[in-house]
Image (cartoon, rainbow, N blue to C red; front, side, top):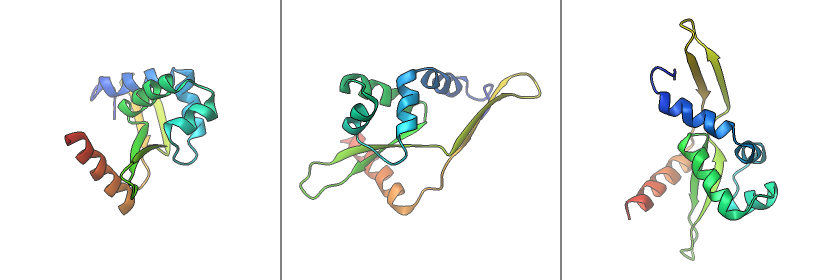
Length: 121
């Protein structure tokens, strides 16, 4: 994805990466975690954690997964949404963002569908 194709996405990624709490969350997310777990692991207030997770989600650096529980009290877990990312100048001296995404398995695709259903209700 190059800056000329979508300046907004590049700006969102740069804003998220410029934030120390967001970078701490990305380092902590070796496996999916809840907002509470991230808040505790990174020593960030929970209200701030939710704002930073929204920033990371909007930048497509973190995905929110819904853990469906039999008691009906579903909870969200967050995971990194990229394997690597590279920001560089292209041949025209424009910023270029290259994001390598992990392969999505069936359970992850189902979680995406469930998250979309929840947004509609």
